[in-house]
Length: 425
Ligand SMILES: *Cc1c(COP(=O)(O)O)cnc(C)c1O
Image (cartoon, rainbow, N blue to C red; front, top):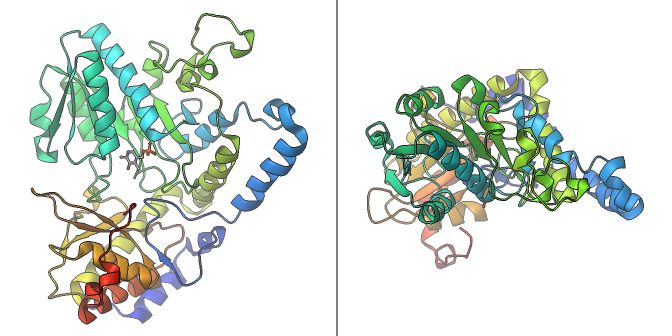
């Protein structure tokens, strides 16, 4: 049965999450399918940031650390994020970047594993993991005399040998949108005696996550994607409370100290997740992130992450079927799994030639997705479309697929202007 524009409008009319779109300032004439790279600005953010600048900084100045709660901000925003990822209060801090937090938790995981199992000197990850994760792991392995072993998703189980200290995976793959079974993979890592570290960059605020239920060991995630925290927003870090106080991480700055204002010359780590902080945090950015996290928490009254997930799957199902029905004959393939249990909140299409130019032609029409380059091997060029159920509707999906159809049918993507690469793709 084919879907019509009227069907999509009817779905929007029935959508219980429809009102959440009003929490965002969506640019006129844009269908924004890149919330997996940079989430849309919350309507509350400009006034909140202006208040932090003009009143908290401008007037209250140094007193703001106490008076306006600046000092406790990483933990307070962390507690809000915790509600979205199945973490207990007091186990998450919003701080630093994903790359830096990965360095901290991977270091702590190596220390923890080495204390109990000194013979384990391997970190396993996926070859198609986001490169910064692999670069951080590679650098740390060199420094600590470890080996980084990269495998394909179907080779993970076989790679969990007695040499493995840590299995480090990104829950939802940034290129394909494929999602791991977090409880099953965590259990497999533990059965093999390895620690489990999850990167939730494409999961937090996008799909339900239960770190506690899965019994994972460490997690990091991103603030500027589905949490809508703004460009370069602080990331977050979670450590299972059973490990937190056993080791500290090597970026032992004063914000992770037990008594930072005692100014002692020696380092005493704070109890709990506070020890995963390093130095002074960016308050303006944290305020914007707080606004972003609040947009996701606003769904709690409407069914929370389960309701967001239902809508996200309905949106991605619709996009997949519309592309299948209406864009045939142009060599478009699907990289994202059809199985709901294996799909994040994005749809990735493949095309042997012209993927970059098609994305550029779509952007010129106001349909903003992005392009991720393939490689000479098994990974094809990708046209990537993120579907944030907070602000994307079913009519948007119809229109996006229709623009794609027109770009393909007219061949307008072949125009020279769409075939020049920019620095940031
Ligand atoms: C987006 C993303 C990052 C980003 O890291 P930064 O330190 O914020 O640049 C890291 N890992 C994964 C898996 C991502 O998707």
